[in-house]
Image 1 (tube, rainbow, N blue to C red):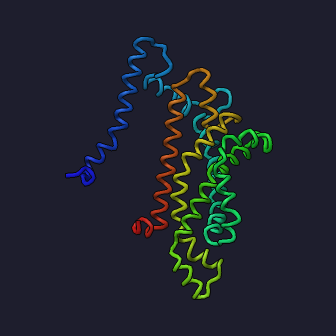
Image 2: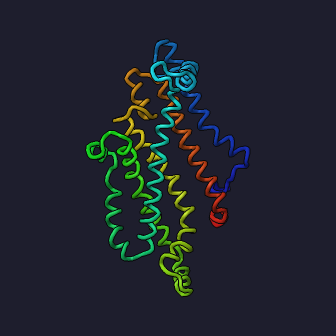
Length: 270
């Protein structure tokens, strides 16, 4: 029997999915125990007890200076920036992507420009954004939007071009205008693909968010990580990294569930 044809049952698949996480945790526990045995004050690999104390302090103990629960205030600040940027990127990509994919004239006009812009490293633009827009929320949101919008536009444009040409011809034969074709034929078919593209953009979006907050911010998850790194506070950094990862996973899960609920036919077609 070839390995390509071996399909694990449900229980085996669950064990295989858990195994990498268990191995990483085991490696951390062993490494932490070894380092702490040599130096009880070691900060590089704190014990789970130390990490738990830090979580309690950051999430469930009010800060003496501000009175805020730092983990939750940082999360609210970061998610506000991230969601605003995702909303802007989605709206721009939906309009421009459909126009490029549908209209040959717009494709000739904008496709080369979007392709060129998508090659610009967004982080290289961060100093420019801070100079032009200042150190406020606008520059951070702009960095995330600039970082993921070109990818979304190109992906949607390609998905529109992949639609069966016969559908567009039939719609025109029945008297549909370009606007009606976009609204009734193109949009329903690319909307679930847009949600998949957003899922793929979550990783880069969090990257740009953390980078912007690390350089110029007074709140946010990235700000807190780079603030405590000067004290080698791995007991705070590690939970924050894990929390950021969990937020990204939950957002990805929510997009999958929303796509299946709103567009049940899409998963069945795939």
